[in-house]
Length: 109
Image (spheres, rainbow, N blue to C red):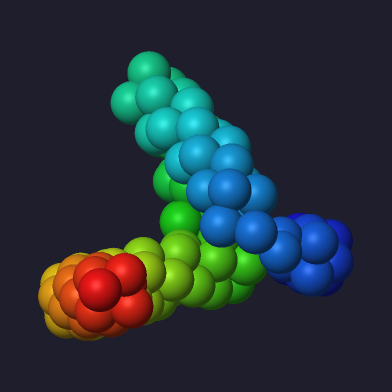
């Protein structure tokens, strides 16, 4: 299953695509958990638990989940930086407008 899933990670370029992949995979995991919970036969239940474990530890799933976390942390940092530098930039632009306004007033005299 892992070799078949590996090309999928190459196709997951955007954050949105990665989130869709994670959502679908988590649905599979949830379905598998339900199957385990509803299986009365101990032998079959053990097989289902092993399949569930494989789904939860799937390399593509784990890697994509980590990538999403990293992207979201970086986005939060970028947003925080933008807010901090944005506040300073707004002050600079208002100062610049005042100077231009004063210069225009001087030129009109």
